[in-house]
Image 1: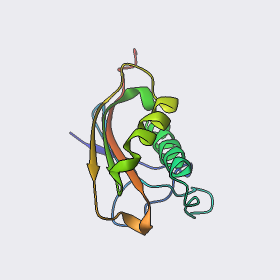
Image 2 (image 1 turned 45 degrees about the vertical axis):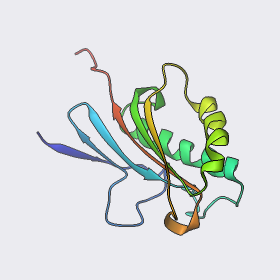
Image 3 (image 1 turned 90 degrees about the vertical axis):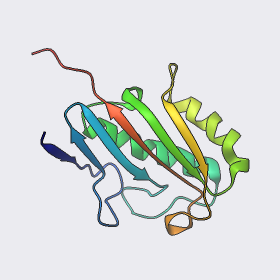
Length: 131
């Protein structure tokens, strides 16, 4: 099965050897997003809530570029440098997602790219469009 690379200028450009997302069939593999403003390529301030909002806005933009939306995400992986922020992450996530929620893992890590506090990647399955 062929793969299709998803790119959008509404999310930060890749800063390494990866694509924003890769589509194989109806499945889209979303690369990790950090709290980088896509217009300026500058990180949002040090506020954890602001970081989470920017991360989820970036993820949303990639989903839309792939022909879907956040509701099409079936699995999220959340990486936190401080697990004390887990409850805050949940609260902000609730502003972007509605039930039924995707499957999710949350992992505490020692560090993330560019010193951010949170990174999120995921898997999305887009619905079949009638011909």
